[in-house]
Length: 86
Image (cartoon, rainbow, N blue to C red; front, side):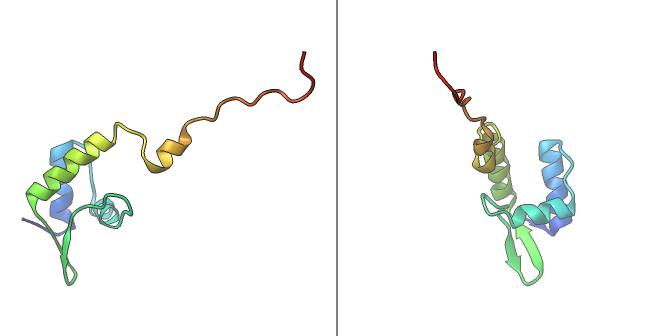
């Protein structure tokens, strides 16, 4: 079991080879879609390593598909020209 944002950040950094800070982990816990699976007891945060590994795996798979706002970034088809047609 990992305790605290710092140890969670170090674990994610080791698992993904991307640099995560305490602050970025804190933001991930408050995400609306697929938040980090932490348990809170007062002001302390905990996470099981197995749950964190499953979350990292899911994030890697999800990163290959456009989701949410990214799905809306697909450009719209071009509009026909206004004016007369020939």
